[in-house]
Amino acid sequence: MMAKVKLLRTGNAPLEFEGEKIAGVSGQRFRGKQRNRWHELALYRLADGRFVLSLRYRTQWEGEAEADEAHVCADQAELLQVLRGVDPADRVQGYPPHEVYAAKQARLIEDLRVTCENLISDLLEEAGITERLA
Image 1 (tube, rainbow, N blue to C red):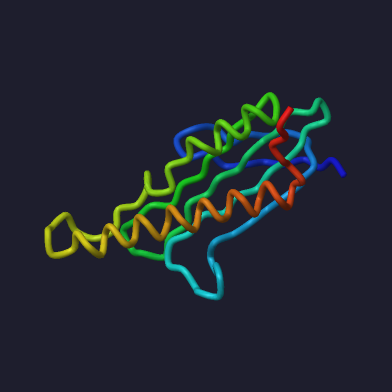
Image 2: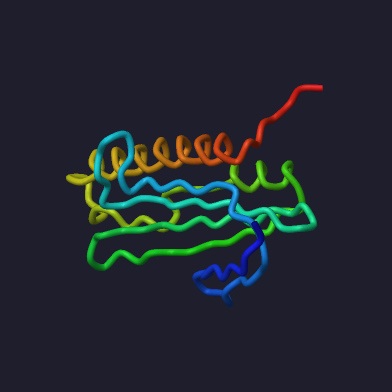
């Protein structure tokens, strides 16, 4: 069912459109573990067949900023390309830059990467999007 949607975009004007939400996933509680930093993804289909991908970074750490992105994709191929280019750690401040924290920072980044990759897979599965061989 088509509905009016307004998505915030950090550093840009909000994106407004009419579309149908076909999938949504959150990493706040992922694989039974509550997270302090996570991503939320939502996928919308427009009447003309295009997709809108909402990608939100959320954090409970004081001093670390949240971020919202929205991407308009002409088709499934472009959507998959955008998702492959997602850097789950591009907004993460994490631990202070010091060798004492290097291992913790590396674990944080790896955890966000793995969690986001799983969320992307879950989003595509929920939306019924598959990559087919010819």
